[in-house]
Image: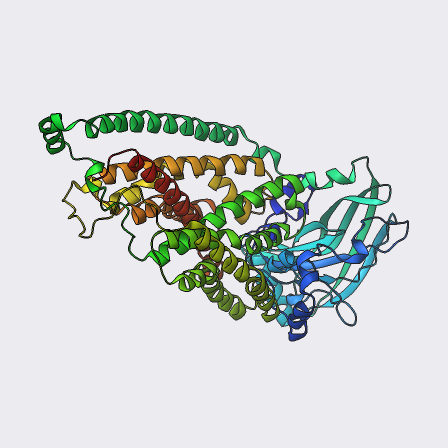
Amino acid sequence: MKSPSADFSLSLSVFFTVRSTHTLSIPMRSTVRSFSFIALVAFLIVSPTFASESDHKYQPDDPVTLWVNKVGPYNNPQETYNYYSLPFCHPIGEMAHKWGGLGEVLGGNELIDSQIDIKFQKNMEKTTICDLELDEAKVKQFKDAIESSYWFEFFMDDLPLWGFVGNLHPDKNSDNNKHVLYTHKNIIVKYNKDQIIHVNLTQESPKPLEVGRALDMTYSVKWIPINVTFARRFDIYLDYPFFEHQIHWFSIFNSFMMVIFLTGLVSMILMRTLRNDYAKYARDDDDLETLERDVSEESGWKLVHGDVFRPPRNLVILSAVVGTGAQLALLILLVILLAIVGMLYIGRGAIVTTFIVCYAFTSFISGYVSGGMYSRNGGKNWIKSMILTASLFPFMCFGIGFLLNTIAIFYGSLAAIPFGTMVVVFVIWAFISFPLALLGTVVGRNWSGAPNNPCRVKTIPRPIPEKKWYLTPSVVSMMGGLLPFGSIFIEMYFVFTSFWNYKVYYVYGFMLLVFLILIIVTVCVTIVGTYFLLNAENYHWQWTSFFSAASTAVYVYLYSIYYYYVKTKMSGFFQTSFYFGYTMMFCLGLGILCGAVGYLGSNLFVRRIYRNIKCD
């Protein structure tokens, strides 16, 4: 397979943007590195940069560090390895590492000082890095990397540079392609006064890979002054034509019109239908014969008033997922707002760090919603409910992550999570998230009070009559996710493309609108499904309303399968496992979030309509 061009001009840089903002993997290193994370928990959480580059200001001839990061197949974004896993020129002596924040570590980055001599505003002519002696093993490694289109990532002053390891050139003497390795790196740095604004890397001098040959690995540096301000230096990595395309704007407008139409339709149908139902059920006893005839002709939701508030099956599980979903809804809203205000996409791993910290501190919400719901439905084992609420989603993600981590360790990839980082994440959960969930549960169950249902629950459950197939809970549940998925379908394409195709997602204003649209559409569709179910005299609306909304995640996962085979060129067991594993985590969170929103909306609707009727 022929590798892409080696010329990494700024016009192509949008195809190689900083993936670590979005990925959720982490490098596996030595025991010393692992335990250093434990000793520096606070530093890992809050520190985005190393102290020497914290102010991003330099004086003439100040040393500027070129950090090497990772290397891997271009078509497999998560399959990355240590840069020096390939036999490039190694630094002399002990390798100096740069430790970033927790999100950067979880992003699978391992920055190592290349020890290449670069000084601020000082041009460097062609200078030798080292003489690379090629033996059979090195040639094989480089050839395998070139055939797999290996690319690498460097950082200078927290700005990324990219390049391909080599290329395949036609061989004049045979029908086969010749493997060539780029031996010269031309670094172009643009600066404004005492700050670096842009960096770019072009590669030259391709040399054939031959056993016994010595390659002169060289570099050069050119400094160019520009007038771009430091605050605008990251704009070059944002793909404005892609994310702000007319299709993106049109999809937002289309989803917004769907919300207006759907909410209006739901309001008209339900208000008119319920008004007629109220008028029929509120008739005097003198009109009893007409009432009985109407009821026999059209069964209604009032007939199940004695069972509609019966506690659902597996109350402890339902309370846990609803509480977790409420927390995730608040979490997503909070992270989106912080991303809009703070431009979190600029920092390596800033989104991941923000997500983890906000998840820990919003755990109070999950406990509060879960504890209140469990208490209002007559639950007694609140400790079990609290533990399940606090651990359900994290442990599901841990289970998937454990399998992916095992695969990453087997492959020796930077995606493997070291033990020290696992301890850091566990400490955050155990000492922040879990206690807040416990506090929320205690507050929720004490403030919820005794069950206060509009209608008394009868002792003997009412038999549920058989209805047409489209009124069964399973069909209502699967159909309920279609419209919510339709409202976010286009945005899912942009999110998936940014995550899996080297683009920085920065249009969080669009994401906020789509998220609010998803919430509104989910609530409206779930309310309609609940009303149809109750009219069919089926009072098991609690789990049905949850699954009706949660089924949105099923359609998103089906779309991810289509995206994998049609929109990407990923291959191999490693990347396939990570793609569907990460997507599974995302869809689990999305399903729990939508399910909780759907249940809470249906719960308010059911209580509202039964509060306005005469219950015997």
